[in-house]
Length: 322
Image (cartoon, rainbow, N blue to C red; front, side, top):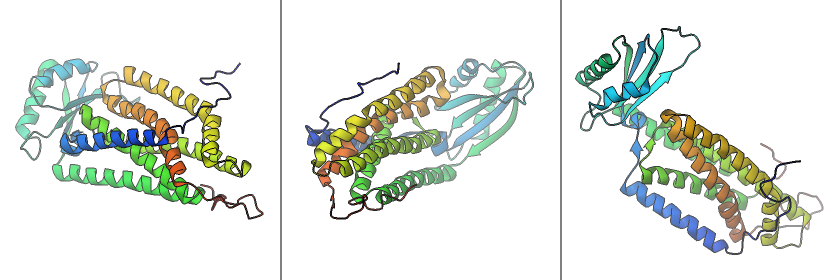
């Protein structure tokens, strides 16, 4: 007996109010952009610059003890991570302490590093400081530029792929959905002031891939049904296609969310921002595949040329596979 989150056969009307869905999405994107330009992002050390101190001790790493010792210095964003490696011996307990650059300073000063080391030494007497590495503002600025380029190039590649795989109307719908997902994710990080670092950029690129996969599944079924039901209006074909793929979409999304929620609760502070971005991305990615990409396709329409004898009529470049 197979588990089903939705009935095998559904007949929901997803396009009874298509303008409403676009209006809601547009409103959320405006809010996200306003928050971004007014509040900005809470950049982490990767983008602000800062210093990483690698420590080693014989006793097990207690992150709470490390954090309590450092918090008394009032340094702002401090990230403490325990490093696990099967090659480490029982007396090699390694941690990474990351300190953001302070306001008005180009980098973390040697005096501040010494005070951090002194605070940790007081909490863990046998601690050793293996290395100290700093990221300056110039490097962090380059990381912001590189990360932005990576996201833009990923979306541009999607545009080309969908255009070749389907038709340009499909490509526009898919790219609008991806931009929608990225903007809303950045917006929620701005609104909640969650730390934004390179891990979140990785999450954004993953969200782009996840959302694209959902959209392509729906569009593939739309293309099949456009050939199968040649006289059926586009709205009915879209509704039929989404209903036929709804069970798969919900099963994929829910099982992914179960794993992500477990990581969010049990994974610790280090990956919590990344996992939160993924949870948000799965939700808005599933939403945008149905209520953004498909609605854009409905609004733009698509030319169906059935005068050609072959089965690929009306689906330009449909035989080009990734």
